Length: 284
Image 1 (cartoon, rainbow, N blue to C red):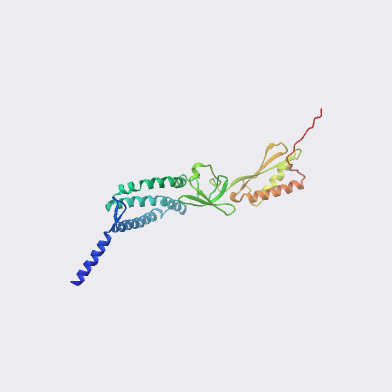
Image 2: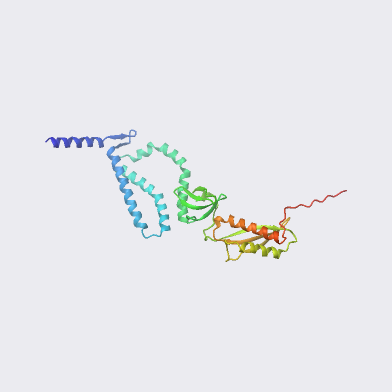
């Protein structure tokens, strides 16, 4: 008899504890039991979402699996919010009162998080549009970097100086984006140079081709090409166009080619002029 009374007393204490209400205003009351139910439902939802994710992505290639995981991360919190509201409504919480009580706060938060929502939506568009992938070399607002990670709000890229470039995703919608490697890793680069009037242009073309074709980073097919671009004010302007396999580090082979052009021009007496102006003095 004493054991039954003790058990009954313990159960009454537990029931009384779980039945205690947490008041949030006159219309919003949540018991401790309701809180435990919400936590349990969210926990079960997390397990179900993980199982569903594994079932859907088990046969996907690694690249597609990574993209799907990012999209899953975007919509997981939306599912949590929907489940939370449904659970609160099921346990008797006035969800309408929750929204009414927090209307002013939600408006303020909504205005403050406007840019955040733009970033998230832009991130979804990036994945759907396939305009940017991890590993791509991109240029935006004059900054160049190799994409390392596309996250919920930002894209993380690393510059040639090994600095981390954090790009808010909404900038993709408001700025022109240059994807250097969307058509492949091979890119056409160029080096411009001017020579003095009266120079042997055929020799200039030969030397420019030699400077580019002998560099180890330059791809032989397609072959380097020389363009006679213009008759300048002080020089005949040329451009040597060549192909590189890694445009992210293009500044280094381009620098080497400039050094070689200067050396070849000096050996062959080709002059690179500086800007000149002829001043005629008329005496009356």
